[in-house]
Image 1 (cartoon, rainbow, N blue to C red):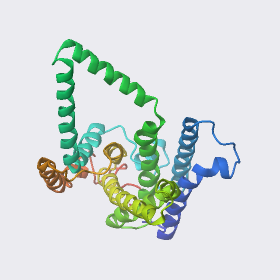
Image 2 (image 1 turned 135 degrees about the vertical axis):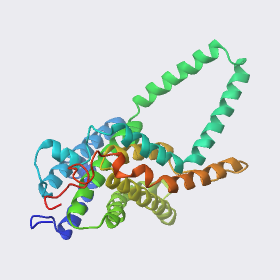
Image 3 (image 1 turned 45 degrees about the vertical axis):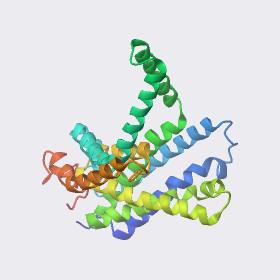
Length: 311
């Protein structure tokens, strides 16, 4: 790297400040701007969506100023953040399929529950008929409409994945790599910032646990452990593929599925599926994330590891 590179200290401080800003701005409207409380939960969440969006834009601007990039063109900048229009289906299908293997037990359990529910509905409704298909279709449409207007759905599956991947992967990873950190170090360092940003849930969990501090710390500890593991995986996906969509689809899928189900009482098939999924995940992790699958050229590609002017 040339003399215009980012030092390790600057990279770490910038990442820590970015993580702190991502959390702090959520409380800025009431604590700093002294705005009145929102009249409804929906308005409260919309206000938070705007705060998260502002944080993402600021993080992108700061990292763009710090990164000693070869070119300041918009296309080059977007490529550094993995925002690309090439290899889209690879960046969506391969990481999603790989992530689904870790949820093999959960997926099998959901299928078994769905089959059982359909059998009950068919027995109650008089069997498989046109009327039955019509009712199921209407219920599906109603469920979709309900989800589309649910602010929690927007938070969990759209706003949170996009803003968190922009801030904690697309902005931080290029800074850390330009700072001279090894890829393996970045994979485990970046999730630390990601997990610390989730400590703001401590008071919320504390109140839900009837103000039992020990129970609250257990829940937070589990959440932090999960975010570190997932954050490492998402960082690995971003570094390997150089594509923003890769960790994004994995993030959305994990938010939808929750914690993986490894065993279920009375259902040995779940345990077998879980073990098979884990083995498949480990065997396919590197082949399905090989950079050649996501880039036409990896020896001279501005969108894959081409972050610094000295590279």
